[in-house]
Length: 261
Image (spheres, rainbow, N blue to C red):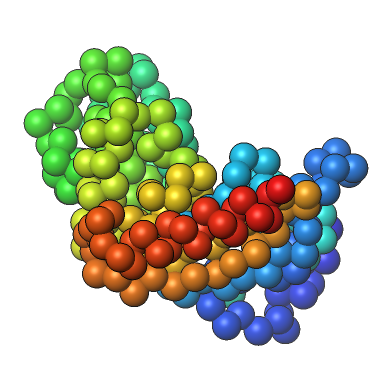
């Protein structure tokens, strides 16, 4: 399957930075989790995958990350077939996935260290991203000493420090309280405006998708597929009380309700 994808790589046109080309995925060769998904994402765009649990959002994210391989179809990033994880794609998980035996600084240095960056350069890079998430003052702390929101900011800094073109985020704020979640949403908007990574963000929260995304892809289950593709032109940060915000909320709520019923 991967071999077939690599053979096709040389002649398939890639119109955008991420290209999901007619992808289907079966778990254990039986259950169809995704069915004939097609989408393209330009470089630097912030995209939310929105949908109910079980619609294949995380599966699609893992295919782009290279943690899974398609049963059918192909995934391309920057014109190359995805045949496994790579440094061009950074992942941020819901559970932080920090190394508890390393300091915050050493956690962020991990990716540049693996890439062979010299000590002084990787420390400078790590501190840059710690400062970017406003946590330069806790460089010598350990993950067990941090709140959930601080851990997630460290996880974002660690992913960015590795220098990816794509930031893949799997419901990273779902476990946080409402106030912390709102603050980190604003933080992520600011980081995207400064760094301009391509972001693919999984959520089942309609409010979050509207607040963050340049574009929302609504997914439905059985099998997972994209049923709506909406560009949001509202200026950020976005007021939840605005007429346009309410209109989009009602639209997505209806689409998710109708498609998943």
